[in-house]
Image (cartoon, rainbow, N blue to C red):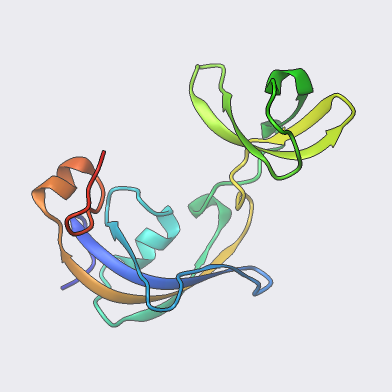
Length: 160
């Protein structure tokens, strides 16, 4: 069965940056399942997997535009520490920020200096060329419920 829309695809992968440094890997003995065609993974990887079959192994290079987007300096802002209330503010901490449209998005603290905090709203991998070493472990038809919900449900364990 080929990878296509409305198929549940089970993979294992190792993600490396453009210098070959491993960023993330599916632990041995585990796997990752997603619903193909529903934007559950980055576009560059999803596009590369289309048409492949169980057992295929491939290396997929993904540009920022097909990954987590280009890095946007406008997403970096320095704000007053008072905005964080009683929360512990340190480099690496993540918080939810509100966009001008009222939507929440994650920001990461990159600098704390006196009463000023620099936060970065870019995705952690924004602007990076990525390399996935992928093995397709399985492909199956999605259930009607998975299709209607837009994501994979694990056996006997689904909660919204």
